[in-house]
Length: 546
Image 1 (cartoon, rainbow, N blue to C red):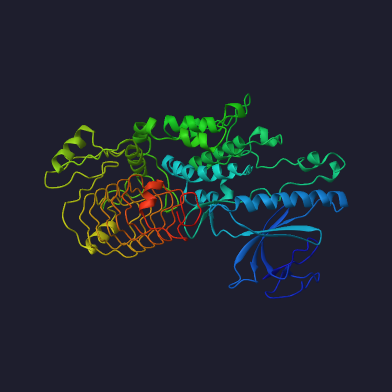
Image 2: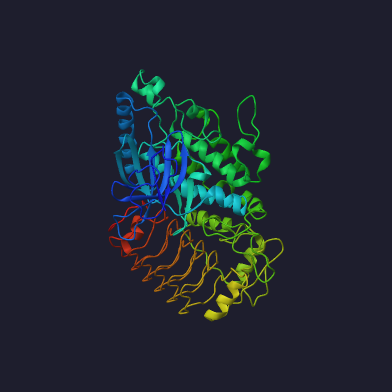
């Protein structure tokens, strides 16, 4: 279909490949390259459309935002033009981040202004919650760990988003990363009634933001970086409860959202959320960095052990967020490793530089006393001396893995039956191309020369595992835990290692050409030992040789 952009057109829908609108005669190919195929949204500022760029091979999709000034007088048009250019420059600057849509083009035509941006295919967080229910505390922390660095980057460009909410965060289909959209570039509106006033007054006479998500200072047209922090806090409440702010009660004396009784989270996380949601900007976290520091897991590791395991959330499995520990319990195997367990292990690895290698008997003893160096946040029963006490317990269910050499078929069958714990297994030289081992636990396992090319290893635990000379080309290792893992000589070309935890991993001779390390926990010294090329995406999101 070809969609007409003339706001006065009585019938904007036309047949595909039509040159002129059948209803009003307007030209349908915008700037001789963009063919609008569908209207996405409309408001007082103008409208948003899905289009195809017919000047490029394959006619890729893009998003076109149309700004319609409220008046066409020369003075108003000049101000709108200046505002439009300023916002286009801002979008061009922040669009360099891999989790922000790129600005592809901007132009003026027929006294209207157009921004062309990268089209992001996927579901919004609002759609995710409506489809699958609220997130667990671990899932919300996972969300924050991905969004806060992005927000830190945006603020570093002197940009305030002003409209953070679940509907503006899309889980990109191709890589499951969160992308922040709608920077309000076309929502700044020139008020013709006040066009005779100063330019500053005329350009800011419209409060930008979504009621309930925007804090008081933003609605008073005085947004600061902390305004985005507040909106992010309200978004966390939505993810935890499935309720929009308009559906929550407010304290009539202070204007604060009354949310504490509606969520079941650890005390420390509740304190962090409380400070994100302070009505007074003076008492709120001032930026994303302060929230990141406050979310260090060490102070409340023990309280996580009690609160995370019992969260009755997430009714379906998705790679984009952490599942609850009770998500898989079909009686045929153990539940998947707790996401909080991996978070706990990451924190402990960061604070402990001395590996503790235990025998089977000593590990059983340490599990009984609760002092194991990699104690998870779930209770773990001991087993007989002939098996490794690596069982994970949730709601009384457990599974024990014998210390034997397994075949590829046995491992895949075991995983498909619900088992996620392969701790200390010898899987060397086995072949698992394109296998799905998401959230599996391979802690301390032997995986030398294993073939995991193209495998889905999202959120898997490879802590202290031996992966020397392993084939992990094009594997999905997003958010995988690889602390102290031996990856010497491993092939990770084209692998997705975004937000993976690689602290203290051995990367000597590791091939990271074309790998995506966005947000990964990895040091410059480690990267210096690995092979990279122009296609490698580094932790800061930039491509190129190290």
